[in-house]
Amino acid sequence: MESARVTTNGRLTIPVGLRRRHHMRAGTRVVFIEEEGKVMMQPVTPEYIRSFCGIFKRKSGAKSVLQELREDRAEEKRREEDKGARCSSKSARRRAI
Image (cartoon, rainbow, N blue to C red):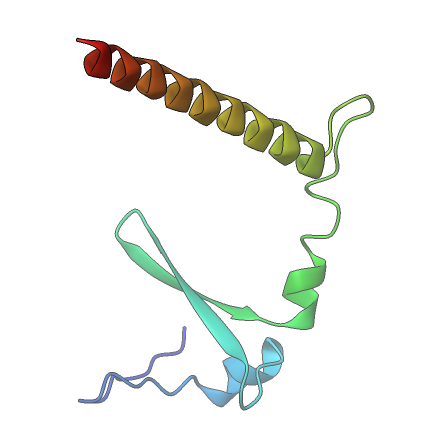
């Protein structure tokens, strides 16, 4: 187990052994994950990004994310138009009174 200290500016130096093992170089982005009271650090390297390849693959016959988004937007637009039509008819009734 390797350790490091946090500076007064909140900076942390990652031990050289860990940097080498995980291919971290100057400019490597790191994300922090908090889970069950623990803080974990994950370097965002090309290998890490490649590990996500294919996890969002859709099942055969399933709609694409883009298709679902288009349908959701069309439904939202329809609801807004219905709402606008109801508001217009209420305004017309108020003017008639």
